[in-house]
Image 1 (tube, rainbow, N blue to C red):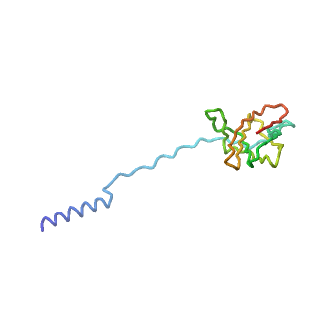
Image 2: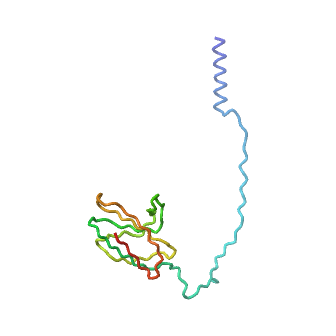
Image 3: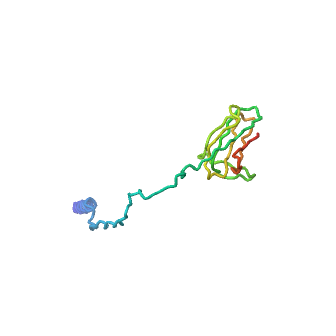
Length: 151
């Protein structure tokens, strides 16, 4: 009986200590960090632009497509390259798609491209497994802005 009373008391004291957290100290909250004061200028009345100023940096190009195959498919145009394969093919970044052309529906297409683009990347995706996909890198450096793809 003495042994079981002693065991019961030890268990109760342990349980109370754990339940109450066993003590602990008080922590002070961290001091707030001072925010630097920044002077914001709301007045834009002094900004002057030239009369011929324009944010438009686009230019129009003409892309003609001469498809001699018989399989239907889509010609996707992209503005950025993702990577270059070991054999030198440039694979376009799929998030930079500009448009999709269907060569059997349109021969010449006029596009507006960003003047900062150096290349346009084309990818032919046939609707049949008998024909392979093809990729082209078109350097946008013609002074007359006319480009052509034969395939």
